[in-house]
Every structure is written in C-alpha cells, then in structure tokens.
Length: 607
Image 1 (cartoon, rainbow, N blue to C red):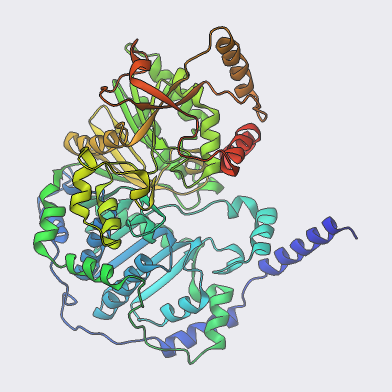
Image 2: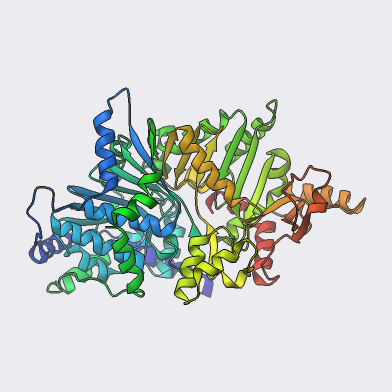
C-alpha cells in the first residue's frame, strides 16, 4: 500500500471513529457527576442578586419605560477603544440581576478571556443565570478547564457550537478528516458576537474574548468596534440567543467526548473555582476598578450615549447552510444588500477582508451607474496590517475592479496608524516611558517612528453607513464566508447622529497618517498601456493570474500637501508611490501573496 493510500485509510478510520456518537449512558453518568459535585454556593440572597450600579442598565430601564410597540426607544453607545469595551462588559456583569447570555466565535485562555470567565463565575454565585455559547473551532478547547467550569456554579452553563466529532479539542488528523468527510458542516461556523444582560442591554460588533481585541496583546491588536444598545432592541437579541442555544448544534459539555471523559475519569476533581493567575495583574486590577468608577463610566461612555428610536438586531439562523428556512436563513446579508442598493449619494464601508460576493459587486456597479454616481469610501487592511494574508491576496487580485467598476475610494490601514493613541499610550506605559510626552510628539514635536509603536494594529471592525442616515455595526465581513457560510449578527441603527459617529470613526481610519491610498500606478508611456491590457486579461482568468504588474499601487501623502483624489491633475505632485506591499519585506510573505493571487481564485468563496 502506497503512503498516500495509507494516509487516506488512516483519515477514513479517524472519521469513522469520530462519527461514533457518545452513548446516552456516558452522558447520564457525566451529568450525575456534575450534579453531585457542582458548586451550589450562593453568595447573595437579595432579590437583585446584590447587583452593583450600572449606568447602562439605568439607560435601558429609562428607554423601556418610554417605549411602546409603535415607538421603540434605545440608548446607543459606540465602543471604539478596546480596553473600554472590556470595562463596559465587566460593569454589566457586576450589575446583572437575572441573566447574562454570551455568544462568541473565539474565547481564549489569556488575561482577557480568563478575566471575563472569572467575573461570570462570580455573577453566577450571586444567583445570576449565566449561559455561554461559543463556537468550538476557536474557543475553550481545554477539557480540563471545561470540567472545572462545568462545576464552577450551578447557575453557569456552557455549550460549544458545531464541535468537530463532538469534541472540544481536536488534533490535526481529526480536523483533516472532518474537512474531507463533512466539509459543509465543518465549514459553517457561528461568527455571531452577542453580550446580553437581563434582556435589557446588549453589546454586538466584532470583538471576541481574547487579549488582542482589548488592546492587550504585545504583538498585534485589533482596531475594532462594538455597539452597546440599551432598550427595546435587547428583546430581539434575547430571541436570537435562545434560538441558537436550543439548536442541536449547541452541544452541552457532558455531550462532548473529551470533556465527558475528563469528568468521568476525575469524578472528585471538584476543586472550587478560584481567581485566575494573570500575566499582568496590575492591568486587570485597573480595568476592574474602572468598571466601578462612576466618573470614568460617565466620561468614557454615558456622556457620549445617544438616545435613538428604531434599532433592529439582525441575525442569521443557525441552519444557514442547510437552507431549510430558505432566504430568511441569511437575514443579515439580505438586509445589508437592501441598504446598499438603496444608497443615493454615499456608502462608507469598513471591513477587514475586502473579498466581495458576486451579488455585492453587482450592487456596487449599479451604484456607479446612478447620476451622479454614489461615492463609496472603503477602509480595509493592508498586507502589513492584515491577520489573514490569504484573504488579502484575493482582495489584491481585484484592485482594478474595485477602483474602475465599483468606483471605490480605497484606503488600506497602516500597521502603525498614528491615530491609535490609546494603544500607543498603553504600550508606552508598559515600557515605562512617558506616554504623555510621546503622544504630544505625534503632531510633529517629537516624531514617532513605526518601531516606537509597539504592537502592530490590524483592522477588525465591520461597519456600514449609508447616506449618513443609517449605520450597521456587527460581525458581518461583507465577504462570501459571511454571506454564505458563517452565521452573523449585528445592529442596524436608523439615526443620523449615530450614523455620523460611525462614519467619523471610519473616515478617521482612512486619513493619510493612518492609511495608504490605493490608486492607479503612474503608467509608463506605451509600456504601461500594454501592461494594463495584459493585466486586465490575466485578472479575468478564473484561476491563473500570472501578470506581476497590478493596475494599482499604494500611495502616501507628501509632507505639506493636502489630500487629493487620484483624478486631480496635481495628484502625483502630492503623493508618492510606496509600492504594492509597503512595510512588508519582499520575502516569503510577499511571495505567498503573489502565489495566492495567481492560483487562489477557486477558494475565494470559503476563505
């Protein structure tokens, strides 16, 4: 038997073994162990579960008191700064009186992930019902930790969504076998992000539970966005969570083979949950203190909150890839396309992964045929800032289409944007430098070099603003995976002031100090025209795209110049070309990007 045949047989054996269901008897035994060993303490017997004050829940109760079926009412707060978004979550956990429901794609075992887990256990011990639903692919995949969490409190329950072979943790062979035998199911992930307290306040957007989403990672931090909504929209969020929680793909811990085995093999492993040991305890203590500081909460959150009316929480159904609910299973994608199609003068789009569906492309083309054409401002990642090189390569392949057919005003985030002040301040504080003095130099007194910034910044926010009137903040990346495979969620807020805030944040990310402008490269006479023709033909090929000279490249504004559109006659006087992949060494990264651009078109729909 050849080596290839041996590997196929081995993977087939893994698939067959993985598909064998866990016996009902084992599940019942594990449930009995948990019931006998779960921590039943209740630290509070008050009717409000000893909840601490929260301005967000105060906003929600005021909004609900004003609302009726014809007149929804909500308070909306943008969470733009990562660490602030963590403070808001901790405040709400400590203020919960009845319930906390969390839905997420990633839950890591680092400081941010463990801090939120610890706060949730403490809330459960106060008497609050806590439910966590996390996608298995990137969350809580330590059976030992899950065994402890299963017994941490009688009020805490965790389920993992769509686990591969009904396990919390898989090895490489199991993942490979799952892709080969059951790709359609394996490829459908729950990408929703929802944080819901007392069915009155909800947070949704791009953030998962990992250091890099809260400006705490020393290597890479995400520029992300959440919307905190207090009021009637929270009822829609509650209905969505229950739908996913009750779905067969949401699997309880005792039904997972490895977690089940850990529970049964260690029936007396019922150590009480204790506070985690953090990598940076001072940072954790600071955030915990801020979560209880009324002045901090007022200054960073509620002073900037907006009173809005209609807010819709849109979400895909958990059966999305099975299509048993028809087009309604893709509710968020449907409504985003309707918003885009109705644009009259401006679309402002921010997405980390600029790979569009055919349907979205047709809509953008139609917007350019309007009289006058709709201005489309797009903020996305550069190769230097992205966390997904393969996806960027597919975006790079279609630059000419973006600029010519879709009319995009396209900007790619720099890995060290100058207007990421809190990330810079946090880094300088960690290194013991004078953050205030260094920040003062940001405008020219003491120039900051890229190497002074600390962690690389990557765009992760997903937002859309149409005609300055309506804004969407959510988990949808506007790409084929979000449209066709993953379940997604987000809020659409029908309020010009809220839309203006989201728009201003996106526009800030496109400014010259933060992003490179993508525009047609300065053509060489005759040769340049020939190159463009060959490049256009090459880009149209379904798989192969071998022409190395792209239609467009990256530009940086020269000192002393004001921003200009590429169509301005003085554009090249004020902008200098910085190449296709600025701040990326022409090494393996660039080579792989070129390779995927040339040969990766066939995987565009699943990346």
